[in-house]
Image 1 (cartoon, protein in one colour):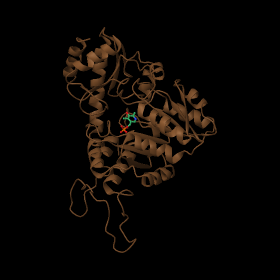
Image 2 (cartoon, protein in one colour):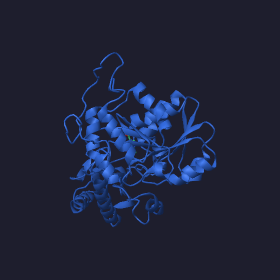
Image 3 (cartoon, protein in one colour):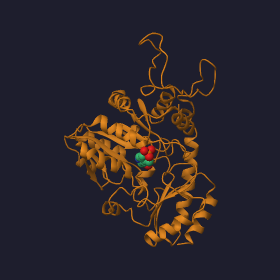
Image 4 (cartoon, protein in one colour):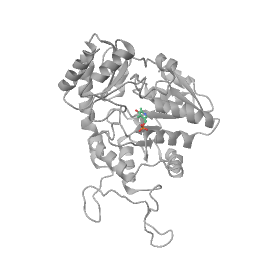
Length: 383
Ligand SMILES: *Cc1c(COP(=O)(O)O)cnc(C)c1O
């Protein structure tokens, strides 16, 4: 099946006992056993729950993986991967421009635990692979990155690791692109992680995360950890996420079209110092975006003239674009990375990556593009 069909059907078989077309949501913490240890494969909902299983199967199919695991949040999913595959004394290699919460997890939780991360700002696959040594268990990349929208050549990094005989696993945070635009496992990645809070859920009404692995063996320690540490997603959250996924391909198409319109308009505004969108010809990774992605995504980052003052005047003046953290919902949002999502990254590091005080990140929704542009236009007048 192709992606749009998988999104609607995988994990959504009619309920055998009633014929209900949409499977019921299994609100149960436990399962009644016939005799001690004699049950239908379900014993306790931290370990296994049918609603969660359905979602896990669906996300695994969308990402062309062998197995999926659903977690309570994107960070719980990332934590699950790192904590289950690494041991104190190991190391991780990461591309520097990453989600602030992942950086905080690595620096504030895993460094004291004994796991160090080496970062590079150079997106060349060889530069990333050069940092790998015998202690490296994971190479962690996000593409497109948040919020600078830089791209990394996933197939290139996978090849460089192979060429060096490295045993490190390549993990791709695919939250920004989603499997509708990019499937990292098909490009050579070993593991994909998601904040399903964003485009997969797609309606800004649920927090969740997911892990998909290329092969079943890689999932074993992650599955063990999911149950042992218990950061699982509840049945209602799984249901909402699965419901959102059904429209992922159509939503992404609308997000991409609107974002392209907004980016093209933004390029012509003198009050923006810089406009970053992978679909623009002047984007440094435009060629790679054309090769690696089936669309350029719904996020547009802009630097407003006048620094923090300019950015906050702009952000306080939008009416359709809500000033809020997060992204990927049907409604448009505007975020100030330096103060909001990326505040946990020290200023010098943040600014070196381009996350300056004038930077605003637009999550372009699926409203009418004319209305969105009119809203941005009137807000820019306040700058
Ligand atoms: C939001 C986000 C996360 C964290 O996900 P939560 O669901 O908020 O825990 C991780 N990676 C990226 C790229 C994100 O945008």
